[in-house]
Image (cartoon, rainbow, N blue to C red):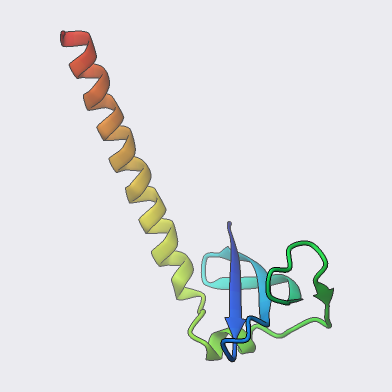
Length: 93
């Protein structure tokens, strides 16, 4: 599961919809939807449940979870390999 926050705005006035979702393999589950005002942090208006189609129309599709999972896995592997090289360098000195 990959937790994500997706903001969708129409104009530059700063008002946006904030979707908190859980992305699983081939499915995205919307956990909550909030209306965000400019500079707003905690007092968002919790609206009705939204269907996933709203996000899918905007390009947020279940296939993105596969991409994110592979990206995160590769990133972790690269960071771990870099860390191992640093440790090796330190030990050899």
